[in-house]
Image 1 (spheres, rainbow, N blue to C red):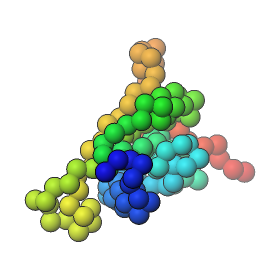
Image 2: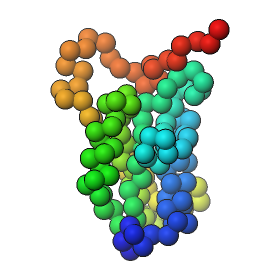
Image 3: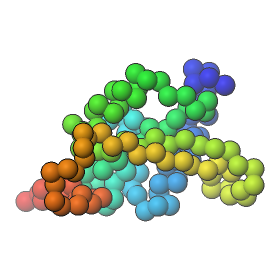
Image 4: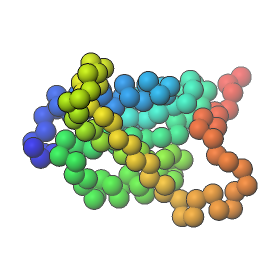
Length: 134
């Protein structure tokens, strides 16, 4: 089935599976619509920290539109986020009702040229703390 033919319900199901995958890893997961992707991941309370990751859920035919990829990859440094591509693989050997028998594959896309080359401090997830409100 092509990405154009994928129904809204099928797409929402795929996004829901990926959402649960990251929630089980301990992230707070929100809509990524304002960043041009399906999901954003927070390491802590969104009132305290900025999100570190944008997640793009690959369509059911596992095709990536190069225009979408170029737009997402180019926007990530300005947003101070790392892009994660999430694809699903059907596995009939898994008896997991939570993910409907799917395995979620993740690929993080580094978008900085020579990332962290001039930085002596390790960047930690959840380190983008928002200024406190007084």
